[in-house]
Amino acid sequence: MIVIGLTGGIASGKSTAAEQLRQYGAHVIDADRLGHRVYEPGSPGFQKVVNEFGHDIVASDGSINRQALGGKVFGDPVQMKRLTDIAWPEIRRMAAEEIDAERTRGTIGVVVLEAAVLIEAEWIDLVDEVWVVYVRPEVARERLMARNNLSADQAQARIDSQLSNKERLAHADVKIDNSDTLDDLTKRVEARWKKLQP
Image (tube, rainbow, N blue to C red):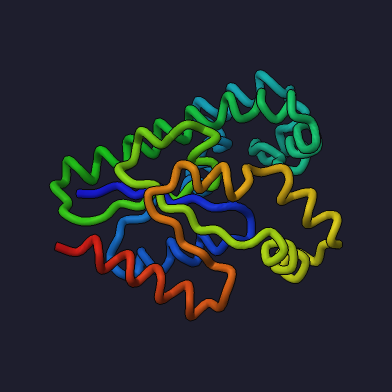
């Protein structure tokens, strides 16, 4: 079994690549999906987040009001770190459990941990290879503006808040450029997949 850590910046096409790998038969673990589970009522993460940020982030149905929580952390690096110090270890624990479950099952194949923050959260030790999907910054900006209806400045601010391509690619075993068409991305992912096959 090989575990791939698939990462990339905003609007890089990371999720598109993950979906393609899923269709080829890889078991994909989506760190974003695990992140949502951190906030589920009754979970250890839920209680830690409420204790840290106050009961006013709990909605009337007992769930965490993500908008209220977002209002407390976005644009504030100190508050964001308080949140990631709770969320990232919880996500890591769940991802490690899912990887171990695949190993125990005796799966011979590919497990993909899709995680935008794979490098920042220091989860590289969970994987055998790091695959980075990247695009030129101007392409990411254009895609973000079109996808999220943002101004050029808003899109650039989101790109600037993340690791740069250079920082990500320094950790990459496999580099997949998605600055061109979807068809080009598909061919590049397919070529990498074929190299994994015995």
